[in-house]
Length: 80
Image (cartoon, rainbow, N blue to C red; front, side, top):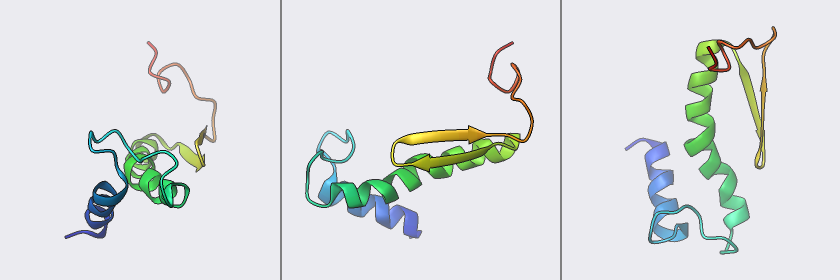
């Protein structure tokens, strides 16, 4: 089993709400576990999308920053 899947299963078993709504707020070690959870559930999928368009994304806690070497036009922003 891939390490990503093992980490996700561990988090789901011990630190997620039963309803699957994410990590339990104010639970033991939640602030410590939020970073790896965000890495697998947010950063990796974003990295694939950003790489396709040559965009760099950076996350610090809950802040996301997107940068590009050229101005991001309407087409890249998803506007027509």
